[in-house]
Image 1 (cartoon, rainbow over the protein chains, first blue to last red):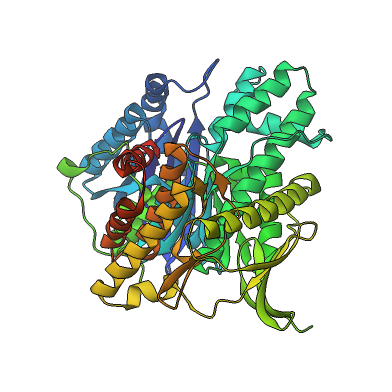
Image 2 (image 1 turned 120 degrees about the vertical axis):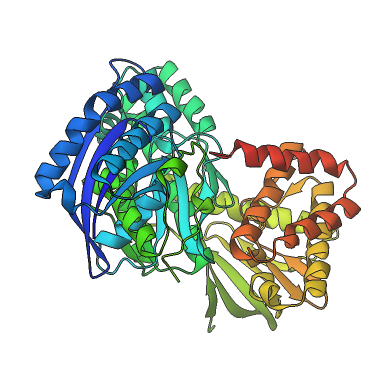
Length: 331
Length: 207
């Protein structure tokens, strides 16, 4: 089965094509285009305009790259949610138009679950992981339990990427600020105390953000503040992930989301996994960030387990929670 | 002294040992290689200290808590009574509805007792409770604090609600029973706190 997936939950419009072979996922193409605002953060309408402008071209690029003909595509998947309404609608509209014009079925999938499934689908031995999903908007610790992907821990206020971006913008960096802050943090030596806020397996960042901004206003060295932000937030993320692993008695950890590109975060989660004799997994970089291939792969899994959707029912859902998905493709 | 590890959690190892001829468990917080020394040392010693303090206060509030024999702040070790009972997490899915209701109400009553004294547990899950001699014993106060605010008590209960939803999802009445017991024993207006839990749920993303 060959599936084409369209991702458009936030700043990224992406089209990926995957093929199923022996229950594993082979990515044939994964074209990603990211909307970058000239200044400030994401404006939902402008992001949607960006997606509308490029989506047709990206579909074509993706098909060309994969070397398949539209007639060979068996299924069209799209990101049903969660995300920004205008962006979701643009991607869904493109998916409906494509589905109708090539006369192939459509299926809407959950973006967060897709981040987890692409790890299981593309990595050998990644079978039943706890996912630490860290991106701009999302910070969740997700694992499979009793028929659903359940959120064991999540942010109580802002996503980790959002926290980093907000600090970055305060100090005059361009969006997305993660890579610049990672670079600055490498030069930091002095650790400033920052709030370390964990409630059970949940986590909060807004107090830390305010405190970090205060250090900046007090003219402390930016490199040291960046270092302190990363060390504190990533330690807390690693700790809640480990708590979820202990709680669910799982022995695999998987990273996903844009912040998973950060080398220090990877290193910390890897050390944690080694210390408790667990396996550590991280998908290829283009499958970690928002991408169409993961949407396509989840479409395949859902379709194979018998789920069908009609074009007239292919709604989007801005608040589509991870644990609302009935996981019919796993025991 | 031969020490046998009976449980390894995320942040501590629990081993069985002897202390002045008593059977005891030692909770030893583990140094984490992933975090820098400044964070590691400070988390280990403050959590050990807070936990000991809160356990003592919760005991005074009338909640069943293991007796503390010894505390080593530097190495993060608490030596306490060995409770030879059953974890609530391991039994809750395997008992009948009547018994489940009885246990959940008792859990709620105990939480109310420490909330009456502004003790916030910080990590109320069914893994952190042991049933022994018809009493629910609470431990693992490592993320706790003293806080009188409705917000803190709401967050405390919200943690338990999430734990029940994820670990005992087939028995969704559990949390309702907990709240019944909680209401009965709480000295302040419980509805205010229950309303807070709903606010916290809505605050979560995509609710």
